Length: 116
Image 1 (tube, rainbow, N blue to C red):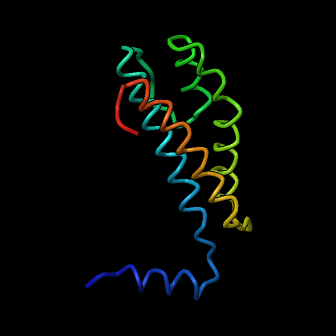
Image 2 (image 1 turned 90 degrees about the horizontal axis):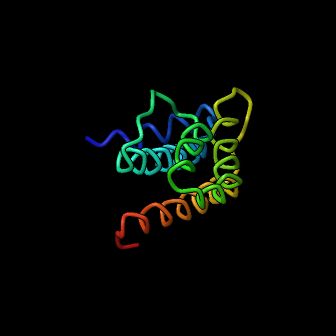
Image 3 (image 1 turned 45 degrees about the horizontal axis):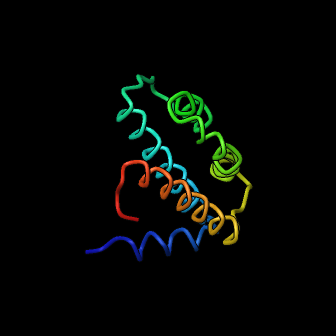
């Protein structure tokens, strides 16, 4: 039996705002793409989820990716603030997170010469 409808019902019943799932997932998506580029470039890195730290390593390899910093900072901010009790994520924020993630995804995929 699929537990997703039950989970959704529980979330709604308890007034849990679940837009944060989208925002956090978009941050994780970007994190994985950026780390894939680090691996491809042979750059060693420690355990981190900090997109700024990851980008700092990447701009040493691809200096033009500095232009992604504003978007990465915005995405990180969107994903982090929803982790705190009392913060309600809005649908517009989730949409913004998805737009930023898609843009960064395109940049990374282009660097690998992958289809968009």
